Image (cartoon, rainbow, N blue to C red; front, side, top):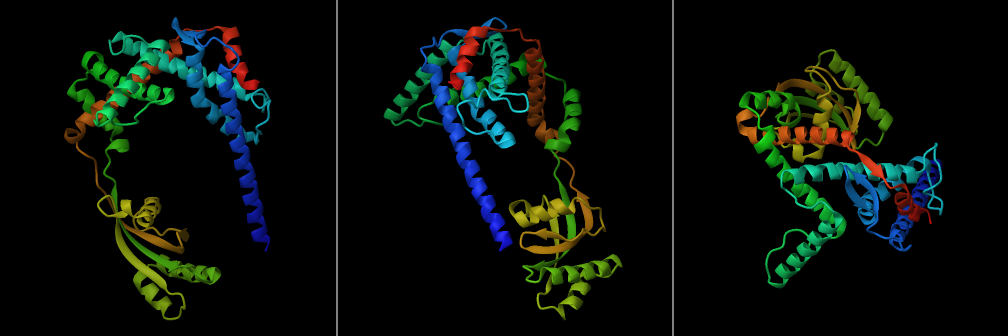
Length: 363
C-alpha cells in the first residue's frame, strides 16, 4: 500500500511538472511573438560580428532556437514556474534572460564566422538577413511550382525560417568542406593514414566476438529464493565447476528452474538487432576471459554470466574507408578553424536595441 501511495504521488508530481513545463513553453511563445508586437523596427541592428550587421529579426530567429532549451533547463534545475517575471528572476545568481542572451550571441557568432568563410570562397554572395529572406521566398515558390507541375519535391513543400536556416547551414557546411579540401586542407596519403590511426577506435573498429555462458532465472516469483540459488550456483562456478552441470543439478530440486545458455555475441552475430543480446554483450565486455559477473537483472530475468574467449575483430582497413577518413579529417579541421575564428571575432553590441529586443520577453 505504501509503495502504491508513493508511485501515485510521484505520478501526480510528474503531471504537475509537465503542466508547468507546458505553461513555460506557452509563456515563451507569447514572449517571442511580443518581439514583433511592440512596434519595434525589425531591421534595426542589435549587434555586429566582424562588422557584419545582425538585425533584430535575425537575432530573434537564432534566439527562438534557444528559448525552449533555456526555459526547460531552469524549470528542471530550479523548478522555475511560468510566471510573468520568469525571465528576470535570478536563480543561483543567474537569470534566464542573461543565459538566453549569452547563448544566442554565441550561436550567432558561430553562424556568422562560418558564413563569412563561405563568402570568402565564393560559396555564398550575401550573408545579410534580407538576402536570406529573399532566398527563402524564392525556394518556397520553386517548391510550390514543382508541386503544381507534379514534380518530385524532397523535404518540406514549404520551409519556415528556422527550417530553411538549418537547411542552408547544412548545405553551406558541406560545400565549404569540399572547397577547403580542394584549396587548403588537402593532405598527403601518409598524413591521412596517421589520422586514420587516431580515429579508428571511434569510427572503424569492427567490435568483438565474445563466447559467453549464462545462468538465469526467468521471471522469478520468489526473488529471495532465486537469489539464494544463484549465489550457490556462483559459488560452485567460482570453484571451477561446469555451469551446465551446475544448472542440471539445481534444476532437479527447483520449481522455477535455471536456464543455461551458451552463445556467441558480437558484431558478427545478430546481437545488434536483439536488445537482450546487445545488453548482454555490453555487460560481458566489462569482464576478462574466464571471469564471472555479479548477479544482475536483464529484462525480466536475474542471473550471471561467465565470459569465455574474447576475439577482437580488428578494424576496417584504411583503403576501404579512405573517403570517410577524409570527411572526418576535413570536418575536424574546419571545426577547429571556426572555433578559432569565433574566439577572435570582434562582437560589437548595440546595447539599447538588444536590451529592447530581450526586454520584450519580460513584458
